[in-house]
Image (cartoon, rainbow over all chains, first blue to last red; front, side):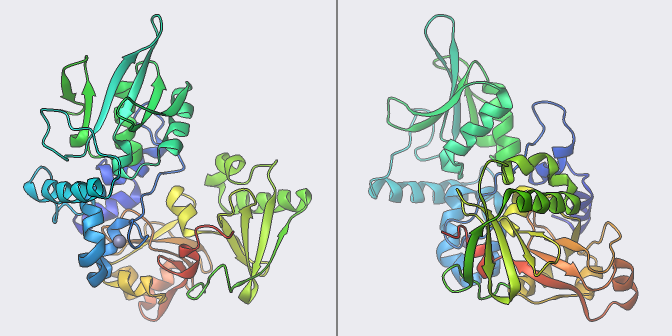
Length: 210
Length: 184
Ligand SMILES: [Zn+2]
């Protein structure tokens, strides 16, 4: 990030995703940010991950692995988007989690094993009712019960944390909110666009932000 | 101020405040941080018990009894400051200044902010502020505040003098208060 862009963001000008909070004042519907902002703190040192780098020793030993599997986009130089680095680190991390007996992640056939992602699918309920089921948000440091509360407010509809058939915790929102929820995950929770996928029907999975 | 703070050793008493006092506190906070007004019902709900937690060095912390997360603090009868965690959730609660990257590690160790760290190319003071104003200390290239400070000089003086302490470091990332997620 250049000096100039920082100063711009301070004045509230930039639209880059790290500056989402700046758009909060503009209430233009789905893209607007609501407060309180959800801030992820490093699972190792407790600081916002962007500040982990200032304790070099701790960063190398313990913060980096956590960041690699939770928020690699904070350090794009270390974990370039779409390159092997982040994904490999993620896989390593997730394998360790699996070994520790933590909930294994869903592994759809087409995706590479261990690639964390957020999936928004539509499930049909009794009659003509439907619900949006969000899987994997917890992999990006999002507290599901807090997020559910926020969705409830934002969409003015029922929303709850439920377990799916694979015993994963998911967020279930009433109605078809796939697109809106994808935007909210991106804008409010800084989930990177390239990990958000929408199930258009039972079989076809597409990028939410191609 | 909070370098060695910990909820075990620094707290001397916790007491609920009367609802009339709670209203006064709320009014003062709203006056000082008007951008928080629409969220005050969530932060300090009228129906919830609000506790004043007295600590060493005449510091008082405010929290809601149910959650026990420190939300605001003040020294003696001075102005209210948000905690850094609260500021992260509501980044517009305070006016901002930005230190350059070189200053970040010093701020994180509790050092006051020197004028050159506020006037160099990586720094910014986008709004004019008076002496004693309470500010969010942002950092070059970072999204979240690194600290909360009090202006020792006005922004104009900082530019003019450009040496010595410009901002007193009141509360910063990694200090005892930041590490105190709840007081229970
Ligand atoms: Zn860390």
